[in-house]
Image (tube, rainbow, N blue to C red; front, top):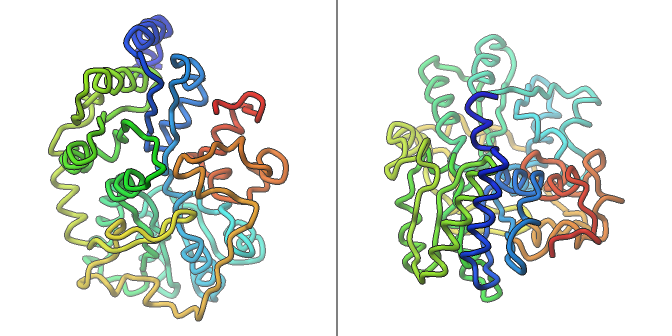
Length: 367
């Protein structure tokens, strides 16, 4: 495919791998933050082709996976109410809550719909003034601008029947929390290119300086990742800890300032719970006071919720990179994409889903 084949060239991939083997003298540990990058690494087998003892640690960069169980239970309680149309992206429908998932709820009669953009939910609200339309808004900084624009557009239209259940999370606080863990093995990061296309990389510069860890802004194709890994290893070998940009075709240091302005206008930073990880201070976004009328959590009183995680699921350890999916006793048996125990097995950016799709088994694990 034009504009993609050049980033999947096997000859260039072999050259990058050869250069990586010549450069690496120690068993470095590098975390790719983004779940999309994880899927490329695992699908292409890049993590298994690295120099001996060098390891990629798969990070918490799956927005579906880190959406807290309480938010999912709240979404289902709202969706079950008469007169409500609950909308979200397709991945969210099969993520297990405490007792069920949105897809099963839809099968029982709830009006749960897949949309491809938050603006689709705004259009639904305009077309159905007699219904309450709720958009389950999840994601990192990548999706926040589109969600902000949907709120602004709903405000301009004067829609009183549109709201968002917001569960946005931010990357830098998660990186800081990982690095503050005394058991952290991460020595360098590959930062998600799409997040940095929005936010730039100035937020990562204090992290690189404070913790003395290289951060390389990296794309999503095989050659992007191989070059990003090589750039990180070169920094490690030279004793440098800087922010570098591999994804030059899409990212600049300042990011997209118009998108940032929209996010700052509509949202404010708040503490946020991460599924499987726990509460992290200043790690999420919520609607600013001016737009609280669009907050579905305020609009719908669903009573007390008692979220309960499946005791077999080790999603938290997988999301922090402490364990691999193949370390889970339920992986591939009691937990599969058709019958997931946790979000990492069902999300298109989940580490468990990546391993399962690639046919990884415990005996073939990269541990």
